[in-house]
Length: 621
Image 1 (spheres, rainbow, N blue to C red):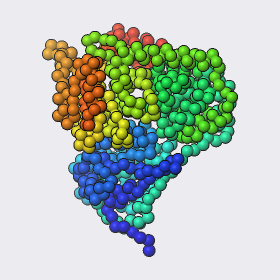
Image 2 (image 1 turned 45 degrees about the vertical axis):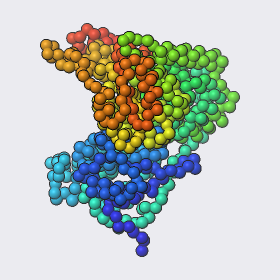
Image 3 (image 1 turned 60 degrees about the vertical axis):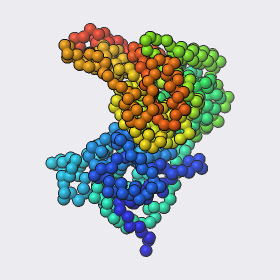
Image 4 (image 1 turned 120 degrees about the vertical axis):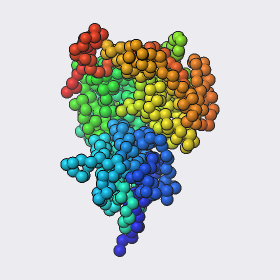
């Protein structure tokens, strides 16, 4: 008779997760770094009790369930998807708080396992507190909301169902092509029920993260397309980093001379001073990358999903003869833009292409253009890093001060606002994984918990989270978690009295920044045009246990950064920035629809410009 272990469903889940490992390139490590969450009815007596009796599977108490998922996603991204956390919640609002984080992880192709509590499977005590009732079925609840934002979803009605559900969850989580959020909804009664589980379920399992190679026919066609091209251009996406293919990309571009533009997720794929690295591409791209992309007759996408920011809303590639070669582990992404698709691991594909392209190199004239554009761009970065503005410093100068204070392995974290675009253009990366901008979902509130996940992936690296005042006000509570866990962060709060990014967008659309400034309501006008809100960010951060510093100018800001680096706990630096002094756009556009009819002259003018710009949008067929 086969050996069994009598455990509750929750105990069995934790016992299983503790024994899951991943292997790539001969290196093996535990896949789960522990659990994150908040206990309530629905998980306290199930998953909570199971974690309590497994102290070797660390549990971190967060202040918001959404933050837990952000922390797990940040950890997975920094670990090149080879590690993640489990996130647990109570039923009802605790569970639905995780939906935003679930969407973020799936959109960014990051593995996260969610274990939300659910209503009673046996139903006789329904409706329970926080239960959503539906008159046409009893088989629905708020956790069904996770279905569209999960790569795998299941509801566990009986203990023995985890015997098949857990391996399926791991299959998806460890698949480079399929990974994202996995949700296992756990009814609170089922979590606490005992069952004689087969002991084999809890053996050590090692999941191989494969490196698929391109098929011979597709490789041959890609090689032919590259050899025919005169102005090829590489778009390096996050897949380069996840595949740990940076060195392969550096060798390939040095061999061929093909320039590389980086997406937000792919920035850092090449060191900024690599001769072929021309920086960010797309709506938040550099002048060098955008000009080369516009003229390219062949675009080689490596690990990119071609978001609208990367393609400048399908206006970036204007050569009428442009064609695409895409390298991606996901066939869905590899096939985009009617490309020659290499469904393969980025490192494997680049190495095979390099071998097949010996003797090929871009022309001397094109190489000279790349060098000239790169040098001009680096001069522009220097100008913006030292831009003088009065009375407050420009955001680009604040970014320059941070960059000058950072070491080559320090990690920058951000997600939403005007600064991700500025960082994409200006930040000079030295090493892979030192630039961590969440821009698949661009989620306000990601930065601080995401930075904690990054730090937990490598405690020896300094982590700087850059947040706007709007983002800070949304979710500062995880500062307390960083203090609780001794996770030292440097958090820079750029105070520009509102939503500067959307304010600038609103102005460009003719709406004048309506509803984007943090102001009191005027007694006479009844509009939000009174005095600025009296927010004391320093006092708030200090109340959460952080060391807090107010910097009145750039000199004080530089000194504050130096102090923060010497501190052994989280430090928050608050600096006011000049809202209207912005980094320019560089021959790129982003499609945001403007009202087709309006009584406002400014809107009508913006609509006319919008209609003209839309004419450049292309279908790449």
